[in-house]
Length: 271
Image 1 (spheres, one colour):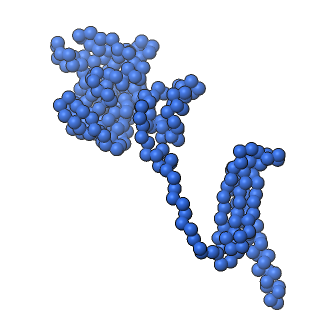
Image 2 (cartoon, one colour; image 1 turned 90 degrees about the horizontal axis):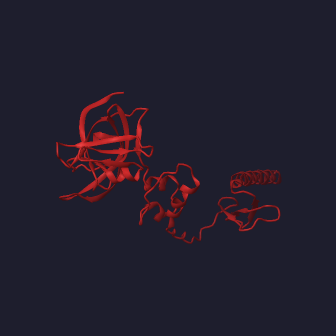
Image 3 (cartoon, helix red, strand yellow; image 1 turned 135 degrees about the horizontal axis):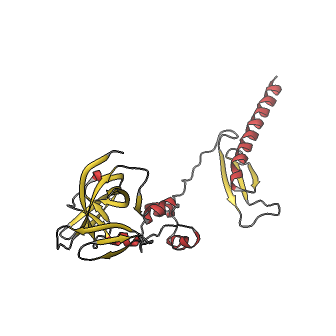
């Protein structure tokens, strides 16, 4: 495992809403995101990406994320609030601020920059990926929302009751997801067309229909094939939706057989 040489200070910040760094070289995982603005103590700036960092402290490697990339920052900030939300708790004095796990094990310790200073920092070496690392890493709401196929906020609120070790998520009051918005948008109707096929089976329309009640013989779905030229329709009843594929193959085989039989009949007639 190769290790970067520079050791830098990370500041524990009770006012920071997230973990932030200005150095892209800190990241072992990095993903550009839609830029969003944040307000610092003196100005406004922009977050452009997020990812994961590995910090080596006193021989231990600690995985921290998500960490947000803000190129215009002048210091590296670790959010006290984020640590507390991740289940850590803190004890401190004028000499140190320590973070402890739920098992009351000391996890991180921050010390004053100088004697008597009220700003606490930790010295850490940015590490390359390795197989064994302690973790302060929380999958955020946006990531879980995408991974679980865009469920509603109510699903996340109830998930912890039914799924073991489901991560604690900070559910936003308002969450605008482009994928959800696009999925709820209605499509424009297909334009009407007067064009018709010029021979049987040249153009086939198909639709799969589900019914609210199963039939006596346990059929729940029906797939329809409609010939654009003859206006003839074929209907196949299905017990499961995945049976639509073999039904389609069966229909294609039937069409090919019918065409071959018709061509054979015409050939005999002409002879």
